View 1 (cartoon, rainbow, N blue to C red):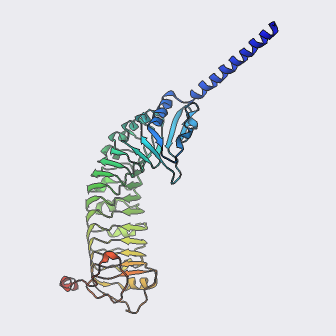
View 2 (tube, rainbow, N blue to C red; view 1 turned 120 degrees about the vertical axis):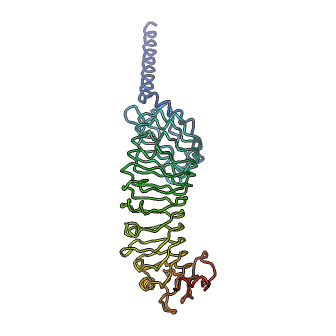
View 3 (tube, helix red, strand yellow; view 1 turned 180 degrees about the horizontal axis):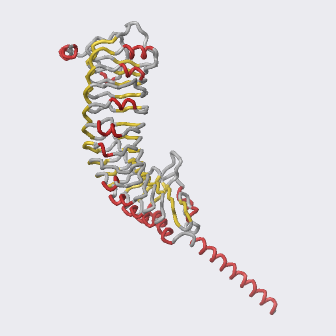
Length: 404
């Protein structure tokens, strides 16, 4: 009997030791992450949910190590990167709000959110993340203003808040961030002027599809900028000083604004593939210094005048329509069109007085030519875009001064 009691006691002791060991392991697992980070992740999780079809949060079981959660990356006991949502293209995103507890992740260097239906404002507490280098919260429904306190993120390199519902001005403090290399604020409802951006490592500025206005000062962007998109805003004034300063551009889109003045000739020598200056109020003649090697040049819907430069003959897609160009169409453009080197040559709605082309010439099927509504009868009949209208020739009462 005594032997059985001792054996039973021994087994009970074994069970107790095993239970203590398991409890110790559990405490050890939970203790791997800093308690503040642990609590912050819990709050962030409570504020967000998977959209139908998304299983991103399936691994977020707080009885296990949070450093093994989807989208959570740790260094020692701190969270250093948080990428919320399944990054695969076409995957459903998240819904809910970003909890202010995000500011408690003191070592966070990267924070991103995939496209989804997250609403509410961007928590100002993000400004507490002094190690943050990458902030990308795009293609959601985040509203309100851009927190001016983001100017405290002195290590920030990428700021991407595109495709949201942000309103108000771009804070002046954001422009003072010394390490910025990418600023992507397109497709919002931002207004006001553009603050000067001081970072000498800034390479990408994308502000298109907002309601920004005013002149863009030459000092607004540093010479390091390579990608500049300001389209679909209400910017005005001259761009001479700005473009003379930006000599490293490889992409530029200033279309659909209210810019005025002349277009600097040196712009046509930039190593870009698509020059988009359409739908502004640029005026005066266009005089490229050398042969233009840009594949696509769109200068349509401006107030440009004078003769068309033969330097455009090497452009593949040339949109000069809806301006005030006059005189003869250069023969070099016609030759390139007939050899299929020019694919689009839109010259409609100008004051052109002639073009040397055989009426029986065969326009290549791969090329498009539109000449209607000029001060001449088009010698060849070619399909034009619907926007060109039905009138073939401009009224003679409008052509007197241009023929002279």
